Amino acid sequence: MAQREEFLPKWIAWEITRRCNLKCIHCRSSSTIESEQGDFSTEDGKKLLEDIAKISKPTIVLTGGEPLLREDIWELAQYGTDLGFRMCIATNGTLVDDEVCKKMKEVGIKMVSLSLDGSTPEIHDDFRKQPGAYEGVIKAAELFNKHGIPFLINSSFTKRNAHDIPNVYKKARELGAKAWYMFIVLPVGRGEEANAELLDEKEAEYWLNWHYELEKELILKGDNTILVRPTCAPHYYRIFYQNAKRDGLDLKRRNLVFGTGGGKGCVAGQSIAYIDCHGWLRPCSYFPNSDINVFEVPFHEAWFKSKIMQDMRKVEEYKGRCGVCEYVKICNGCRVRAYWKYGDYMQEDPICNYIPVKMRLGAGSKTAVSQTKKED
Image (cartoon, rainbow, N blue to C red):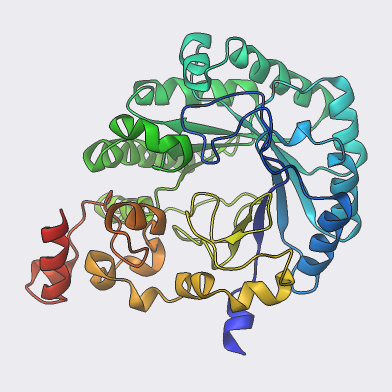
């Protein structure tokens, strides 16, 4: 079956707990220190890993919440390593110490992601709603360097801290991160409570153009010290190719060894997936809905049975501007933002302000354009 050959998971984020010791303003899962429904069992976790291995050997990121709060994290990580997965951990860094680093190496953790949302304690701690969170990240980075554990840094931005983007990049580089991901916050989880602080399309476009100039400089210099990528901003791929063409450049982009397997914008449901702590399979960690549970339907079946996951692979059925855009196959648009804005995840990405050529020439779906404008 062509679909089975073309779309296989290369990267899975697995929420192994929803418990967390922080209360970040943008948290997609609205995590708290206690989980309402509790965590799944160790045996259920191992069975899930076995099911995934039946169709693919993707990178698996153990995330949360704060995954280090789960007592059997090392047992699950070791089991995944033994099955042939590239096991990674996403942590806020506050619980990292020498013993944690030793365990990471012992069970074969390949990469760790840290969250840094400000270049100073004042900015980061305000964003994370926890005094001392910044120092926790700095300490964790130092420990990872000490123990030879590669790490990347994820940075989330809203109007509250976007002014600090250049400085956060410099800090990530200074700390020795292998990669820096600039994430434009989505309206999900506690992010919904911060809607007024979300970057609008003009602000997003400005910072994505800034990112292009940064990436261009690194490529032209042959500087491979750190890989940089915007996250949850698929239209950056349109901006990148537009600007490179404008500049008369044929820029060859680097990819992270433990990346999502996509050389394009959003690959949610195509080569990446998210499994929440209750077993619900979603295209990505920010997607609001799920129609199948991997604790009830084996993952190797759920991956192909889920209608939502199938829809993510039908780029030709996207609506509005995305439906007629010449860049759609390298961008895909953000299905989460489309759902948040229009209640339809197949609609156009509202944060992208690009008008496709077909629309500028008067072709394309006039009905879709009219409907979109009415809903605005």
